[in-house]
Length: 471
Ligand code: NAD
Image 1 (tube, rainbow, N blue to C red):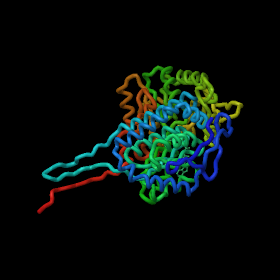
Image 2: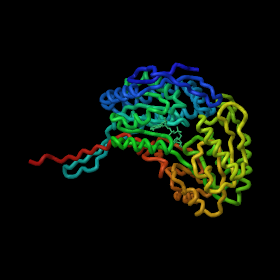
Image 3: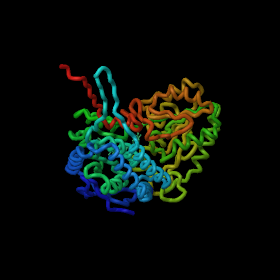
Image 4: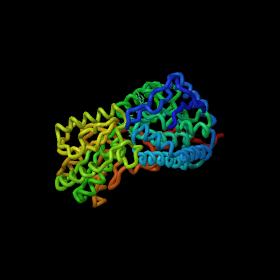
């Protein structure tokens, strides 16, 4: 596998000040080294992005969209390389890695096709008021390790098409697919338009406090998001924060237990539960609770937990040691409070493997119910009253997503309206689309990604208010 990764600064692929190991979570072995940037390299990247701005923003939106489309095409030409690298650094099964890369390409193309036309706000007796959108400047993308490449594409697409330039910094445990994107972009984009720097968790504050960065687009934990927001305040930077969640799934009483279990299992365990909008708590009516538990335990028992590079693996390891330890300790605590109906015991093998684990009969105040587990373990909770379950679903500092499952779609939609979250899906899950706005409520985020609202977040509204000259 490729092992000559370089940073991208001012159109050049360069070495870092040193390099660090990248661990395959399925083997716990280092399989590649990533170049590490220091403050001086970061400053060079920001200066290059700033210098590239006048020419890049002066291009027409059609010209910038063409660049973006060429980048998407070049990714597509190397889709296999991206997918294998993603599985090796992140852990997810190869088919899921290919899906993430395909989604990233689709996202870049979707943003290449989006436009924010100028608006005439008034045209009355010679008074012409126009609102158009100008770029913000240099934008930083700071991304986490669960979906390293699509979460970057969500930022890169709108950033570039609206005439901004970018410095991207991936998470320290999953830098390689971002570095490969930098390598691909080096021969397509003008120098300085897109830069990639890597760190071991020390560059974040330098980015968020940098005077020449106009906006920080951050996806990661709520705890780090708060630091980003505080630091960005120093220069009143624009921020988009896509943060943590503790999404509830509410199963209504008209859904057969078997169907409900299939849907909830898939929503909770995809990407080994490491999805911001994964189902993290399942609320099931008492009438079907026992049958639901039986069905979901069967599904968990059928999972093939293995190295994502092995054919047939349906669930890979957790991405890193720190997350593995956190999920393990939540499971240990939950075991003493509830009933383990699937998984629970760790396999005796190398790698950060945790079998799909389902725990029933927990109280609402158990840490596994209150906190974001971000791993393959799901609490299944019982309810009898719809108002009570809605109140329990909403009783969280998070408000990212949620799902409602019901045979009567309009009734399910009425329940969905009462869930305090950025997105509530009805009878489906993870229907994330670059054309549909995505945002968190409460401590799950600030601002929007995707859709025209997301595109606007990479612009400044500029008003021109003109009247004829009075003699
Ligand atoms: P994290 O907050 O630990 O790290 C995210 C990024 O922030 C990394 O690149 C990290 O190096 C960087 N960082 C660390 N300290 C920083 C600082 N002081 N200033 C600026 N940047 C800093 O998150 P993680 O553990 O990598 O990701 C998991 C979390 O991300 C979960 O909470 C998950 O729900 C959330 N997430 C949210 C979304 C969403 O769209 N809402 C999507 C995916 C993941």
